[in-house]
Length: 180
Image (spheres, helix red, strand yellow):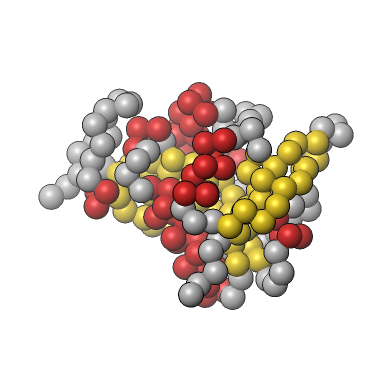
């Protein structure tokens, strides 16, 4: 049975088994930019709207990037990258790490587990690479902070990121749970 096309939000949720995760393709970027617009309108993420949303989503040289698809259309995204200048979490965790970046899910499909399945893909690749996934989240984004806490990610500290022009933005830092 093929999942239905996502309804206009909020709409009734579909079964979680209707979600598919696959690698991100360049052709996904226009749709993901539109989804990012939905997320920005709903949650204010990203805090500062990028000049080119497609370029922002398609950040260069990720270790991996995935989309979650519902009804044949990408409705969420995540990437795993090498630590970069300004990332706070990598400095708070011992051992090799990689950074979770650009995780967002359309408000139309929240509650179906899309964020969780995207994080599972990140953790799978990180395990293959022998690194622990970490991330920084803007402290004011309480929905994201709550999401990472609910999914078992370990709060490892906090700090400030410089976002240009000397602006310091408070962030909470998380690390993926260690395998048992």
